[in-house]
Length: 401
Ligand SMILES: O=C(O)CCC(=O)C(=O)O
Ligand SMILES: [Fe+2]
Image (tube, rainbow, N blue to C red; front, side, top):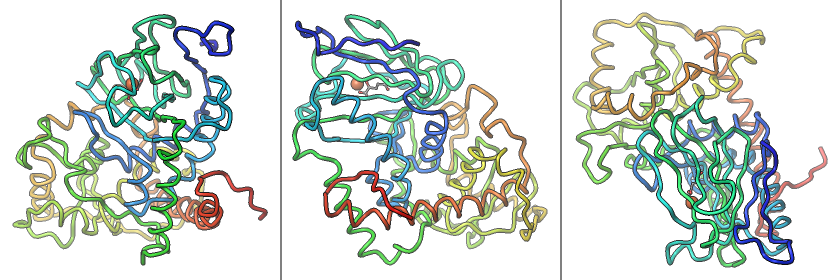
């Protein structure tokens, strides 16, 4: 796709100020953000939508995942300011990874269409996966002007004003999961997202005993509970962390779990082990989120990990019938509607494991490579935070090694 631009720099303001930039994000950036979303998302603000906000990452002891967003947020803000001729005037108002699954859609609207959204002046939507390959449906449409529609392609970005000049919609997703990084921008400094994030980060890292650790801490249970009718109780639905492992072919086993245990909020904070078929990897993950992060890290980095030599000091155990029964009883608590899991998360392509064949050695390698990765990001957060606090702004601090 070539660059499409209907700008505001012309002598007569364009009726539909918008810009489409192909390949604005690299494939690597898209994959890293996809990894973060698939291992950290919560149920979203609309039916069949999932989201990962930066404040949620901080709240779940995963603030190191902010690092990959920083250069991208800067580039997007620079581009929006340049294109809409408002250099040094804008603040990022909100940043989120948002995924839409089967059944979700949004009709004609503007992005400032609620009293509490009036501060939104510009939007930038970055597509992180591909129409027809990762999902079907989900075309973006502008009501007036060109382009009439956009077929999401990983790396492409669309930027537009949040007002009546850019009324748009998204077709219903009919299959798969459609993923974006979406940012809104404002001229109103009192809605600067950075100020809120720096305050949350300071509080979290300075007053939290977990500060030294990079292990995820789950948010409250309802944030991971998917049900067709969001208002319904825990009767029908599933825990999305569990479901994301399930569609990749994994089960989990909770060692301290007794068959009569049925409190989801207690279950999701307990240590877990990974199961596949009738094999159990004898390695304890601190909780289900930790296991999910390692598995999605494996999906992301799988083939690159394989070349590394490693010592296998983790044992594989054969599942006993009794053990299998326990896993099934756990399943009935964390997922009592399996058809719904498949409907929501089944992927269009068969490349969910990053196109690599499963093997336990790969998972073992991913466990330690994941640790190296998050340790590195954690260090960067700790080094940069003092500067962010000084400026109440999140930016790439150039630090000499
Ligand atoms: O994901 C998209 O293409 C646009 C989503 C949208 O319109 C919105 O979140 O307001
Ligand atoms: Fe929108």
